[in-house]
Image 1 (cartoon, rainbow, N blue to C red):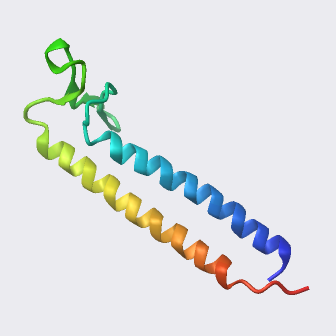
Image 2 (image 1 turned 60 degrees about the vertical axis):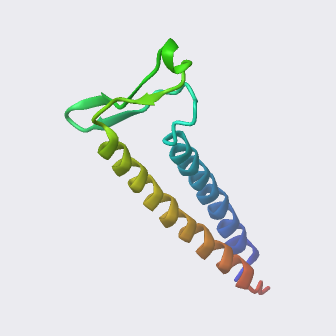
Image 3 (image 1 turned 135 degrees about the vertical axis):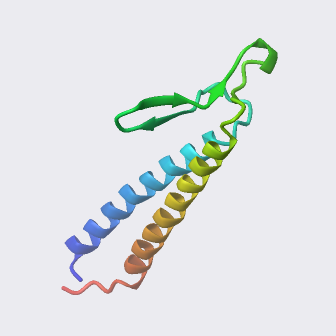
Length: 104
């Protein structure tokens, strides 16, 4: 493997790690741990559906709207699966880099 090929692998790894971090942040946002960021579900052709609300009685922290529990569970499972898949991509690239042998 040449230096340039190794450099390309490292750049790809960097991009994939950034994607993994964004997915983890999205999954963390679904935990509703008192943050004030609303959660909506976007369905192509339909639009956005609001899943959470906040007001003074909740201390301005987001709470799930009653009846959306299963939808939110599905969102968490889908994001969790994407995090797992992306983690495998990152691990594969890390292994490729670790096993790389640079040839002149």
